[in-house]
Image (cartoon, rainbow, N blue to C red; front, side, top):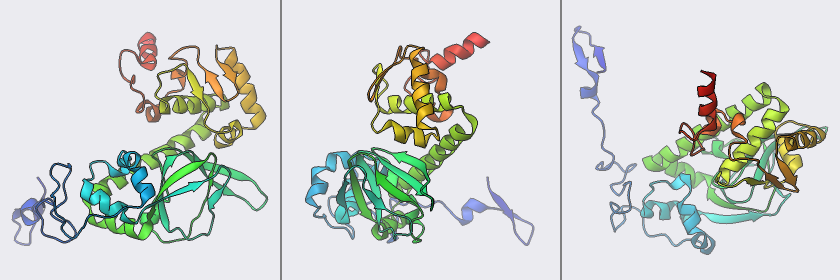
Length: 305
């Protein structure tokens, strides 16, 4: 129990001074009484929020939008309010739609396709910092800062984005706990991804990096087939892993000696456990066989004991 010493040397229960707030029943304007975790609990009338008329493209993509991690457990009335000023943006492969120094006005979520976040130097050198796909988010830092964009963003495949005005998104982040919690979970996951990528670049060999990248793509696709379809050009994968294109090609040829086969953008695995050697804690959390009897990494660890 938290306690503090008062001037008269008496111990005072800190929680008695600041009792926990029940935001579901609070009358504070910042936490309206329609705040609920389930659709069943959501009231049928609004408390400062009216039924929003959504953009037609938003309505057409509503089933995909509802399943985004950003809107996990967000009740329908609040979701309708958040999406009131949202719209769908599409960009073709190769199109750069955010540049260094540009004022960021939108918070983007990838609905379809892939984008790369990169920095470039005056002499034309490019460093890919992130590759983002479905259900991943751009311009996260705009929630807390109004500084210009410090990166470049390019569609590496045709991409469809949910665009939320940053000014409005910032207000929802400040006002609604459930939305803020989801946003913080996203920030935390993004930080872990960046650290994991940095670890791969600094501590792993080039073949290990390629195996790790293939494992991630395989898990993203459901990990239920002996095949990976590379969703974008091999040259982009090589650049993301900080590997020369010729080195990447040589690694693919060497993998064929271990039973892997390549055919254009398709990589066929020799077994369901063929990529398990490249697993790490950051990747294992996305595998439904992790820490189970069918986990090849666990079996290997048992054999060493």
